[in-house]
Image (tube, rainbow, N blue to C red; front, top):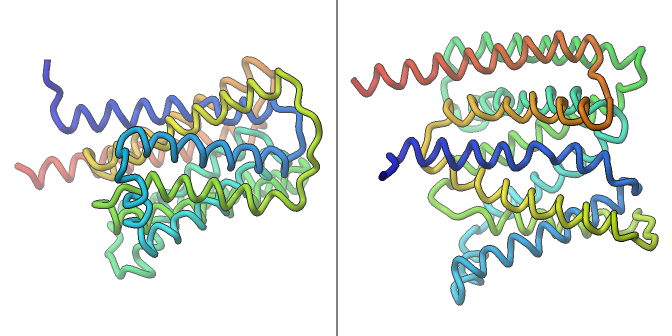
Length: 289
């Protein structure tokens, strides 16, 4: 049975979202300090994605890295900042808070498109942005009394940097940006090397690091390929899956229950983003008729 282009895109993107969902759980299970984790996470991600590129493109691998150009370097830098803020956030706030706030990256991307690309923002997107930002404000305000404000702020920064990377990626969609993600891992490792406190790793930690790197490599590769086949609303519709699955895995395995503010605000964020994506798909379908 031959899959349609849309079905192929949905399948690839869904697989990417499912692959990245255990990310936060693996970070929680790794009992090492944050800068060491960032170093190992970055260097192994760079190695795995470079190896993947070499397997796919063979002798043309150096050319794949050269083709990303200046946009690819900016994507690498922004993804490196985003990864750093993501890991730091997990050390200072709950997984639910981090993932809910990061899920707003699509709204920040829409804002960047308006500010820097002069693209018009549909009314539904403006309304969704207001709802999402208000919900994030509610979650972050809860951190003032719950001791999670620092982590919440880093999650907001992560979302903003990620949105910037997505915006540039959208402008360069014809180019393979997997090498840019590999470079971002290398930059993250270099940035984290100096403050890191390295100690001897036991076999459990090594296995968890390898598992983390493999899942991230597969996830980033799939999430880079998927949007080539489906529209932005369809991608946005699938991304909240991680926001739901990540905290559920943590709650089930570690017992970290999301705060009430995260549950309430998160429900509003996920509902708003899902409705926004469905309306976008409906409008797209009408335009094709």
